[in-house]
Image 1 (cartoon, helix red, strand yellow):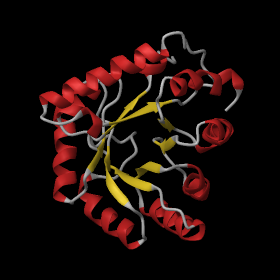
Image 2 (image 1 turned 180 degrees about the horizontal axis):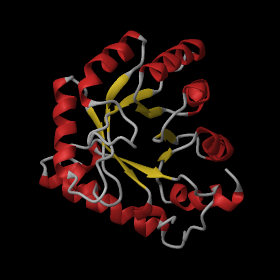
Image 3 (image 1 turned 180 degrees about the vertical axis):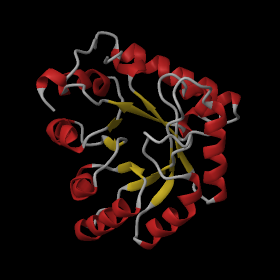
Amino acid sequence: MSQTEISPIDTSNAGARLVAVQDHIARSAALAGRRGADVTLIAISKTVAAEGIVPLLEAGQRVFGENRVQEAEAKWPALRAAWPDVTLHLVGQLQSNKAADAVALFDAIHGVDRSSLVQALGKAMAAAGRRPDCFLQVNIGAEEQKGGCAIADLPALLAEGRAAGLPIVGLMAVPPAGVESAPYFALLAKLAKAHGLPRLSMGMSGDYETAVLLGATEVRIGAALFGSRG
């Protein structure tokens, strides 16, 4: 990613933004009879330069998400040298030829959605002796332009992933834009329960409170923490 693609970020109130999001998560969790501590807040730092991430690190945030392997490789080794307890999630689409790089850098991979990627990740994990948590991405709204496996293909992909040695811990989805997210979150939760998967990566800045109410264990928050990036 070139510097011209890195967005200017207002970091003056990073701590306050973080506390506000944490409070919203806690309240939504309580309404669902859950603990806020059971929901992991992933700060999505895509297109944010390293200096824009530092204020959130200084405020105590330790779980971050990136969309692209190459961008993460440019930013995070130095940041993790200073904050070695950071956990890094890959939340964007992953090309199979980047599987080894992703396995080396990330602690969790959210976009596992096809057989070729399962096989590439399985080989990369075996070679590296490192096994990041994996979420299978489901195309929950059956949108042609969106990544994720079809709901009907989920059982086969899950079986293939397990056979390849992937530590599949849950499901991930992005509901269709411009419609109520709740039915899609509920469907993803139902699918996860049916397949014995304990974790649900769902909910972003516009709908994470609904996601928490419906069982999200990971929420992916960008704009509410870093502001709009265009």
